[in-house]
Image (tube, rainbow, N blue to C red; front, side):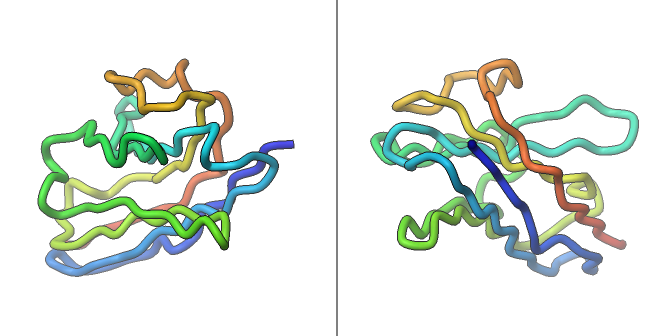
Length: 126
C-alpha cells in the first residue's frame, strides 16, 4: 500500500525558510515520480515541483524558481521540499503526491497523480 506522510510545515516570517519532508512507503522511487502541490484558501490545488529519478526536477510554478528546491534521500524513502525566501503568497497547505511515471508529467494535472498525503500547513507572515 502506497503511503505518503508530510511534515515540516509551520509559521514563518517572510524571508524565512522551511524544509518539508515527505516520507514514502509501498513503492520505489525508480518507478514513480514524486510531486509537491499546494492549495491556498479559496484557490485550486496547484503544482509546485516534481522529481523523477530519471529526469531530475521539473518546476511547475515559475513563482518558486530560485527559491524552492526538491531532493530525495532514497535510503530514507523521503523527499524534501526546501523553501527559501518565503513570501506571504506561499501560504498554503502543501501536499506530497506520487504517480507511476518514469518522468514527471509536463503539466501539473492532479489526475496524473495517484496517491496523496494528508498535507502540511505552511503560513508565511508579512
